[in-house]
Image 1 (cartoon, rainbow, N blue to C red):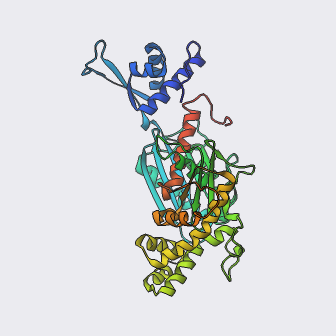
Image 2 (tube, rainbow, N blue to C red):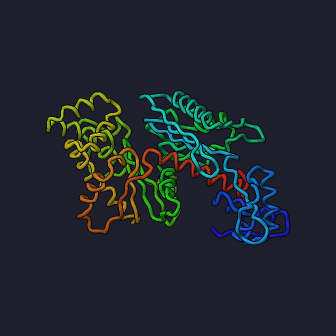
Length: 422
């Protein structure tokens, strides 16, 4: 990113401090001279900025490097104090709650995941979330602030991803069929009270897409669709380097595509709240296909595991796929053939360079990709590259942490004040 620097007025000194802290945050530790050269300012201007940042606790001067072999004055080292503040990332799904804390350089200092029981109400989910967050913060040695106080604690920002249609500006979940008790502002309201810092709420797949796009320091994919594939199916879309949200902020709801006709016999979509596409390729259908294939093949062990796992039967099937079970692989191939129709539709409309499969099905790895490529081979249009998510179950938490850090960059290390518009 091109550095913006200036000199003269108080405002311009603030601009210079932004350039200095951004560069130092990226490098971690530099000499004052090297920092001045990197941002294009005089050593004196950089020193003034560093003194101001040190007073805020964001940088720390180290000892003079007397072992340096260069001629002239020994180098004065300075480092960015990543431990000065922390951010929180949260993922909530019908299956579990995942929480992670990172310092200002993005290093994760504590994380936890807790399984959720079936059919928990909204207040019960929130209670589990708050308990998990509290334990994770204690592990990281973090003290949250108190809502309404003018000064923040060690926690500076929190971002939360949930299923459903979310209004990030209002902090409201508008529709969440899989966890209806969380609809409204319950999450943001309770977390803000508990944490005493700004709390951002967004759709889980959109946060995961941002995390997936930036999972490697030297790679930011500008044409990407990430599809979360589990019990439900949704997509995050990146076009021209920007996350595309759509007019109603719910672009990517591919689970509601009707490409394949009627769902499983004897079961209607309304009974499970699923869209037509996810009804035919989602977790429940994968389990149904695997049970039928195991019954035909006499794989009694897989059948027994599916029955024993109950609502977590998809995990048993995915384990069986990884283990090479013929019945599980047969079921995977059936749903992959259907799922390929959705990828082909996305390709025809958006023509992304890359499609990433995330969510629980990402565990299947290469067998899944091989099946999808085989069923896409006959499509008339050239298909996008396919990958499975490297982040898998942690994609939402990773994206939430990145969003929190971006907000710190925007509001504390930039010239945009909290509450300003994007």
